[in-house]
Image 1 (tube, rainbow, N blue to C red):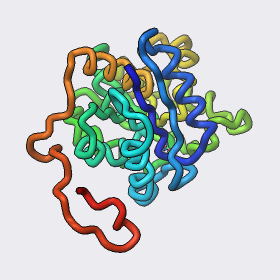
Image 2: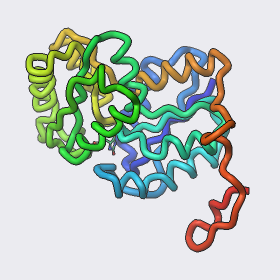
Image 3: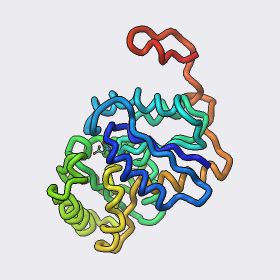
Image 4: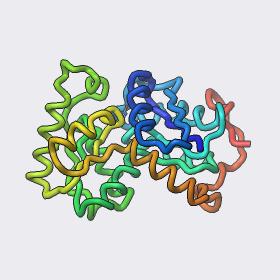
Length: 242
Ligand SMILES: O=C(O)C[C@H]1NC(=O)NC1=O
């Protein structure tokens, strides 16, 4: 099967890191196609960045070789429901996938993400996904997304310390990494924390393999049916549903 992993920000180095994490766990028969959005923000850190990322995400679903499943590799799961509308193939957001994976291996988990403003967005996702009974707390580290890959940011140590506080203060038994750019930290953290540390990229790949393997596709009844044909005007005229 082919899984298309879409980084909706426009930073290729993050896509490379995400693709490596996905390929490390993909089954031998799974092809991982990791792509970077061709339009939008270098990093997605807020509602406006998320909104502006959706056209680039849609382009990646509409263009190029068809995939058996799509993964939105951004912890805000931007455009997840719109992507499910336009795709027959299953679409996964890494936040939703990571939270469900954590709920299978721990009674309670904490999310450790980047900025305070994305912490608030992640809290909204917890409620949207019905994870209030499993997620003990969402924590911010104040490490900007693009600083994660810079050794001088000391991101590893900062994130490890926040995870340790989560285990001691939140009564959590697992950690969800709240940014696709943390995908390379899961083993480092798990070795030191001795609890499950879930990266949504990995969770997304394995859930995609399972759902596709079950022969399931996105329901085209109700709100996830293909968009209604209509006229679009202005800059988005070319995106009119046919
Ligand atoms: O909101 C965040 O901090 C995480 C989110 N932003 C981004 O560009 N990739 C992400 O996973």
